[in-house]
Image (cartoon, rainbow over all chains, first blue to last red; front, side):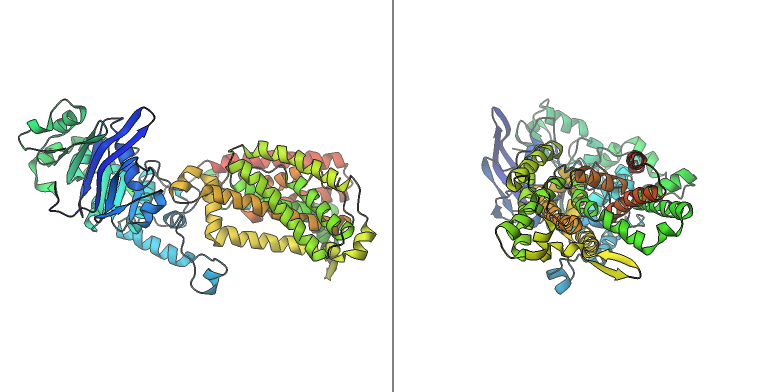
Length: 265
Length: 359
């Protein structure tokens, strides 16, 4: 299926069991270049397990994940990051007392060239600050004036902006965003949704996990509906309505019954 | 993308359309008017070392007025520095641990144990003093390693771990030393290097010990490591929010291990300063050093909840305690009031921290 198009990130037959609980039951996943793919599903449908398997936070019992048609075996989030997949976690994974630039570079700090960096392990603070400023301005976040500001002094939307900027700055292929608007107000959500589109327009593929149907339908190019541990259907925002998506997601509607003929897995 | 789609438009919720006309200054800062209290709060939040520095300055001014030249004399100033050397060095170790949201009750016991190891190696076994010194530092690192293993691998709370190892290290120290003191003359004859930290250099009437200079150098070194290396950023991030730090790719257990090992080694350097200061090696020395080091860190503005504080705050904290003790003593105030004042300072410092940490 869909073998005519090249995927950026693909998964086939992922299985993950926790004791008696089956979180992933042969789940498939396809992400194409330069698209925003929303992943929706009821609570317990296994979407967070799917995302964890793709971002290296979970090692599946069975199945394969491939990046650019090459099979990969992520053992940790670091492996996925090194392969060019960045994840914005729901709890943001920022250190509140460190400043914005420190947070952008947390875990991959840049060292000074030459002996200062090699022997004295000295950080290249200037380069990191300059780059951080550039990244934020590229994403239209330059209103954050002081790059030396501690992240805890920022609003929720600004923190989300920092987290998104971090992933966009370092991702080579894929940005995974877990509920990026869940804790935000209306205006802040709008800002973050625009950021997500910006990231896509910069040529990256985005996986968006969200419970917020209006947000999903606004930004997604395709919607992956997860149900009972596997991919249940893939629909498009312009062929289906939100209520149809919810109906498919909850099992109230069979995806094959739809006139638009959704691709059902 | 789908802006042209009619479905799209109908699906965009009404409240969103209203919000769109409300201007887009979401991520900008309003230049609001701040009250004096808020301004003070922001200042201290951005400069955690400012509060102890102000206290130190005020204390020095107050004692200069009350006591006069006797207090301000370079000799007295250098005396204060000598008096805070050991607590200052242990305070460096304690700061590292507290930055990771831990606490180390065993720093004093590690110091005494390693001072005994240095003394026994050099005097009883007759190893060269350099080797004895290195053996002591290695033993300190191993002691820290044991604390680190218990904290990371066994996931025990640092308070309980170091409460246990405090007793264990202290008992080992009594057993190994057989509760006997190694006399100062013996050290002077066979291993004068161990006394180096007690020797002084004259400097405009001030008598600085090499131990004090060693302390200042250690502060500078750890300041560099905390502020100018990735390791330092990771120490702060681990103390701030370990979950977030590990999601950001930091191996937090490794960071914690390294912090405990470095802290143990620094305690052993404290042991060298201790031998220089008291001359002999006594298994009973430094009994109150644990709590004094925590006092210095807390007065220095480090948060006991981790991730917040500066290493020079601890130096200032140690100096605040030193200045108060020295000044009150010179003013002829009973020792019990020195303890009273230090107790008061601790409570005020922690109260300040609680207030400052609020964003």
